[in-house]
Image (cartoon, rainbow over all chains, first blue to last red; front, side):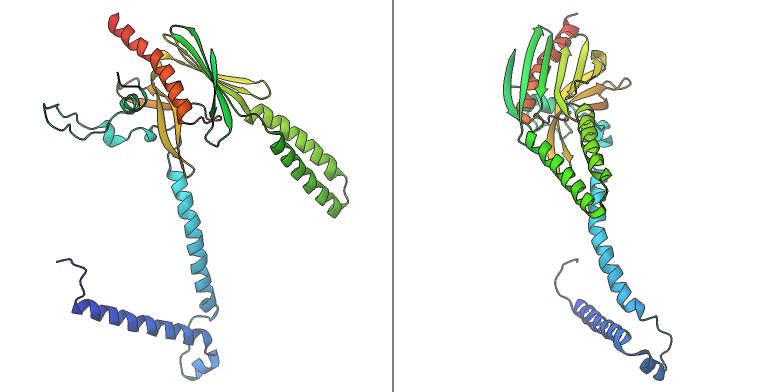
Length: 126
Length: 187
């Protein structure tokens, strides 16, 4: 029942959002460009300062730019350093159960210790 | 005793020297790339040109002598604390592993890990600054848990050899480390 197919309800939501976003944009343009005296003469006095009509987009763009750098930095900070045991194992691997070996069955999935992996890769098979 | 050329992770030429002192004692030394004359002269000229530009702007001749002083002191500090000439690994079968770094000024810094603490010597892969690097490391045994690893000691951090050199070092170390297992089983 969760298909992405178009439904009548979704079409109505989409159209309502479309009208709402156009209305919001027109309201923003009116607030930014129409002089204050005209707005006062119409009786609309309680609006935020026009300073914010320029400041908010600038804040938004600077926040997006900083967000790129911040995400990069957070990633680099959470990468484990070369001398930490997190590069080798973690809590799930330490607590894993050893399943018994059955003949002719595919071995169970498990986290193989790094010494065994190294021996398999780098020491020649005898 | 043999010496073979390899490449570091950044492409600079390094050399691996293997010496077998006895049946259970091996020394593996990696010689790092030398300080290049062109990078030294590039840094020196950059610092001196910047100092000359400051001198032209400020008409203060102290800037020039300060630049010369800074260059000399900076070079000495770099050679003594930063530039590693050779990193070596001495594996003695029943005793332990000794890791030595020799700096360009002649200083040597040594770390010894006794064999009881060494669990294994492995080649590990990890992410380091947007790259995946292979590096050799010593796994230290966790005293409470026979399967656990308490600490990871990365080796050859300045010379950064590539995988082919690491495999040679790994094989040499494993030949010695295997002896202690057979020694335990036989005794």
